[in-house]
Image (cartoon, helix red, strand yellow):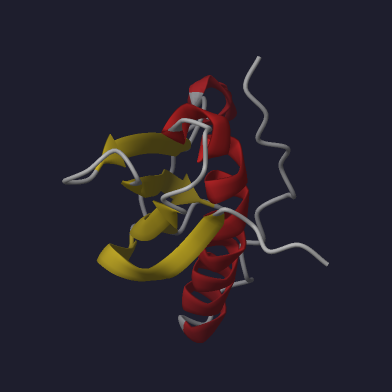
Length: 126
């Protein structure tokens, strides 16, 4: 089996916020919420290092709470690799996403509310 040119160096939580919010909003406003997941890619000090920042922000989950989680994953491409960071970005996002899903489900279940489990997503560049 061949080693990958992409190395996951780890991740850290930049922000985790959970608060109860007992304000009710109507279903129409709830349905206006769009993408709660935001992904950003940042290049490091050289062209072989980069970071993926995933932000999940949802207000009024099940009419009870607000949640915001920001995770940052650090990645590095092998020096001999010919590909660019943009070639590896979808894989890096796919590597970091399960950590975000796990963090969110753990926080919500530990808070005593039904766990919020994000659906599996396909991160391909179109």
